[in-house]
Image (cartoon, rainbow over all chains, first blue to last red; front, side, top):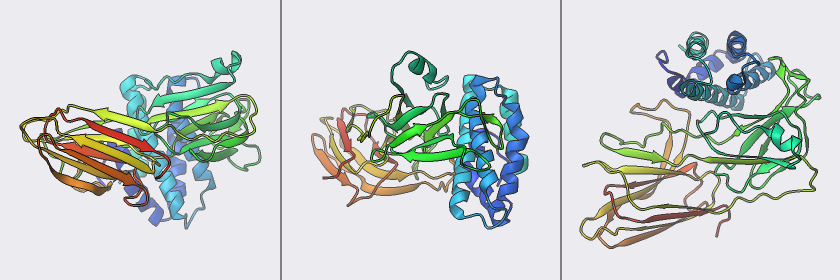
Length: 117
Length: 261
């Protein structure tokens, strides 16, 4: 996949990208690294960014419950839907001022480095 | 406007007995939070979204403390749903709260195959309606209201067609009536069932699934078309797409229900 230029593009590529990690038995590690890298940028003290941190909280919970290898395919779908929705939510909040451009850019950059190819 | 979302605190503090989250989705990623525990969650009458996920704090879930339920028009969730603000979800270490989001996918970037300039598209944003009760109830059977969408004139550029997308999640019956009231010109009218997928839009190969329910065909001036869509005969779709190639007037009435006939 090409580098996502926007969070909306990142959302659209979520399933294709995570599929590659899933095939390589890297889904758990990828999701774990992603939420650990990004969550602190959306602190609890910022209520307008809660929708993003709430998605990251769910991704963290999912990653914790995934097996390291041979992840069932329905959990790949769940992971893809979480990341898809996270990216769309962040995209919307950026346009509405709920998160800053810096936060959105960091999330997109992290996505491209950790999840994207 | 869905964000900032209404606060459940006011409803609980003022003894309203319920918190109703009734909002059009602002994006496919909408997620809502309630810091208040409750005794029952169910789908509200106005909801276009059929399946709503609810996550809440549960001490007995090792490792994450995240418990999940999916509610639908045929299944509410009766019992104490705890928020536990003083506790923390793991491993993110964020405060306990109730989270809810549409289980059904929505994609406002969707474009039907063959969509090219100067085609246009309009979306009716799906309504998410969820009710959280603060008082115990024995049960609630939460059927959704039947819904009617009415359109009459369209945004058609010269040489293009206009596409109207309405939410259809979980519906089992739909009555469609289209009448071309333009006294001179025929109108090419089509109906497509759409099931969204996670896909890169704007490409020549989006993954969204499309089912032709009525292939685009000419409706003569003054003529009318009636189509009945059922889950048994045509299937179940996230959305219905209606296409026209004339601006109208051409009344289109779409009535949908959760109960099949």
